Amino acid sequence: MSSPPSPGSLSPIRFHRLLLTGAAGGLGRVLRPRLKAYCEVLRLSDVADLGSAAKGEEVVPARLEDRAALTALLQGVDAVVHLGGVSTEGPFDPILQANIIGVYNLYEAARIQGAKRIVFASSNHVTGFYRQDEVISPTDPMRPDGFYGVSKAFGENLARFYFNRYGIETACLRIGSSFPAPKDRRMLATWLSFDDLERLVVACLTAPVVGHSVIYGVSDNRARWWDNTSARHLGFVAEDSSEPFRAETEARQPVLDPTDPTVMYQGGAFVRAGPFD
Image (cartoon, rainbow, N blue to C red; front, side, top):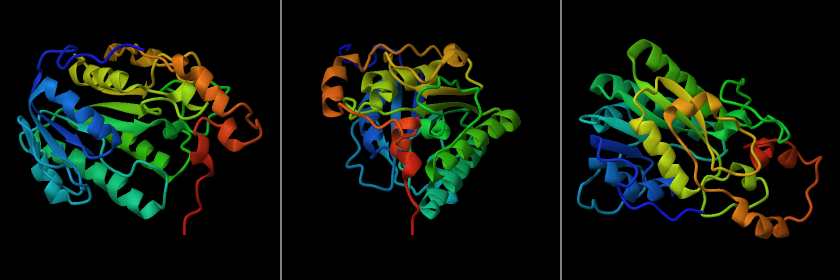
């Protein structure tokens, strides 16, 4: 596994002001110090506590379902990395508010304020009902595995509409499993290292032409369910792999039941989540 890149090593500053939503979440906390290397001002937003603004940061709390707040949030923003919203499977109503109404508010705000590029954190759960013995690409039909996956499918389609009608470019990142290390044998195929996450986001921010693109966020793992050939124009090259974690991970899960839906399908536990009261 490669060593962490030094700040700013992947690209010179390209933006005056970047917006990072969901900045208090798991991946938001990872990207907050890293994205600062690519802009003069990093605007951070979430509903959770973000702490004090460091040098070169702006902290602007906002609820995604608040259209006026989102319109104000996008003022003066050159590009957006949108991680905000509900990030797991759960009841529909919170997902509706944050992930469906919220993403509409974000794109409307981008249209009004003139932001022209968005990196949208979609999810592999957009295609979670493909089997683990299949290899698919971003051009294959969506098969969401729950309300969360449905909301990300909506976001991808909304992004396509805003590109076709208003010219707002979006890179939709179908993120696999981004953690310090794989947690189970499924993640040997879906794992995305934090360094590769940074490489992916920066590639999508700085690619000359994005249009409306979909790419799976995954490291260079030996087991591969996703073919990113159609997204090579984005310039993302993964450098890490789950292979150094294989022996330890397989030791924790020496036996799998091939009839278990969480083993059969790429979405794992999400395919069995719910129903929710």
